[in-house]
Image (cartoon, rainbow, N blue to C red; front, side, top):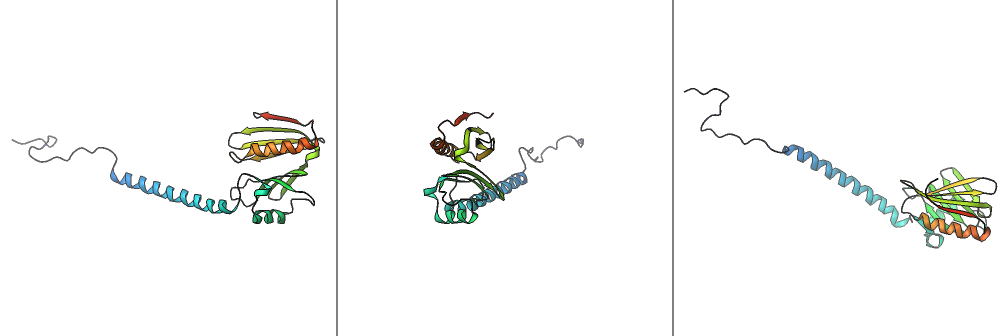
Length: 184
C-alpha cells in the first residue's frame, strides 16, 4: 500500500505545531528593554548628580547654597540694594540658563540673553493659573500696561512663588487685582 505524499506517515514522530512567539523575538525584546533601563538609569543618575549640589524648584534666598548665590551674583541680575527673596531655576540642567526671581524691588525673568523685569511698586494685576504640561503661569501687569509672564514647571512650587509675590506686591499696593484660576 502506497501512501499519498500529503497523508501523515504512520509510525514516524511528528514535530509538535509551533505555538507562541519565537525565542529570538524574546531575545530582541529583552535586549531593547535592558538598553532602555540602562539609558534611563544613566540619565537619572547624571541629573541627580547636579540635583545634589544645585537647588531645584522654588527656593527661598535663605536656602540657596553659597555656590549658587555666587553664580547668580556673577550674572549681574540684581541691582544695588536689592535683596533676593525667592529663586527658581527653570532649566533642566539647573545651570541658571532660565531664572525666575523675586527680589525686594522687582520680579525678574531671565533666559539666556533675554532679561525682563517689573518693579513691584508698579504692578496692578497678578493672574495665576495652571496650564497642562507647562505648570504654574503667573502673568503680571504694570500701571503702564507692560506685561510679564513667569512660568514655573509642574511640581516646582509655583504656588509658593505666587503667594510670596502677592504678599510683596500688597505691601506696596493694597489695591492690586489678584486672580487665581483656570487659563484665560
